[in-house]
Length: 474
Image (tube, rainbow, N blue to C red; front, side, top):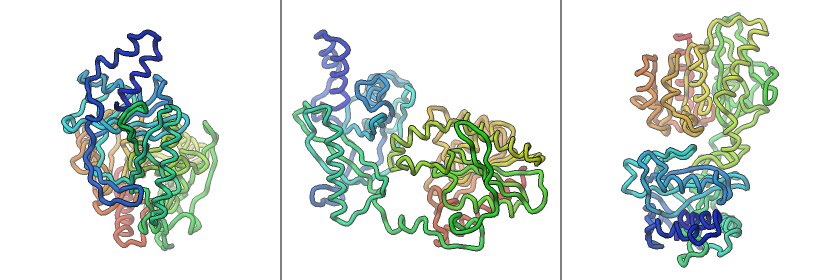
């Protein structure tokens, strides 16, 4: 019996002690145990005790919530409501396997595999925080095990087999990131006669030589090519009173007085990542403007302190932390930058902004306020708007400033030339330019390895286009 259906029976039985409450789900669920549809994959390699699989592109429905399966706000309950008809077609969707989950003691994210016949046009979830996602081909290391008959022991057993998989991989010379995340794949409930569960670890979490070199940057005389940790930067650090705690701002003053200023919005790794300050230095030198970078996360915090990202998204810890970064908060922090400049005696007539990844999402919100004259988004993570339960289209159509988008080749199609974001901006009559960097990976401007000639070339080009666009439109 598949996990979702099996859990539904338990939830029904706990709601009432009557016999009818227990058997009702059995009358409505028509499936044969073991006949659930699975995602397509092939085994690339079989090792001692585990295997490497490649899953074909697929559609999944995901939700996050309480890690307790009994909770009405739990991820399981959100998915069960979706397949029971809480979608735009009121459609009941057949059971599939496996149900994937990542959890801690408070929160859990789960994924339900969409039946293949619905991949081209899946029912749209109507429940809060539930969404359909398309997965590209995915390589995973897998260990199989027999689930416990004790419901309370299921997660503990999954963790034990995760540790087993890690040891087997290490024995074969495979080293994982220190913040790697394992995923539980459940095919049936503990009372089932099928007795099959798995632990997955995505192959992108194995450290390669390219990963080891990725953030080792040589010193270079061009500021935007230098790691902040390797040089003495041009700006000063100031602190302003703020909620939930005081906020630091990195401020680079131009050599000559200027009435223009650029706000730099850092990525999700945080203000201390890569070349953020060096980029600010470069922007100030090239434009002659003030450049200010607020620490939105406070005290140098960032997503790496909460498990980072994996192929299947943020960890539950990361989701809980990132959920605090609302549009209201980042816009309030932007106001603190305006206030700081005014109180410091700088008379600024025009502000522009540029942002990287998460900072691109911040910049789009800044561009809705009429207080930003122009915005440049390099490899923007605009999916943050969907991640937070809102509509990206509404945000984009509310933009009131010219926008330049600099997507990487690995970025979603909606931020590339001809994509939804460009079309929505044109629809509302807003100036927009898109220049793609097809050889680059997401995050390359502040954190790419510029010892690679192509990366050095494209960091310089991205900076040049940023300067040109901002000076033209501010």
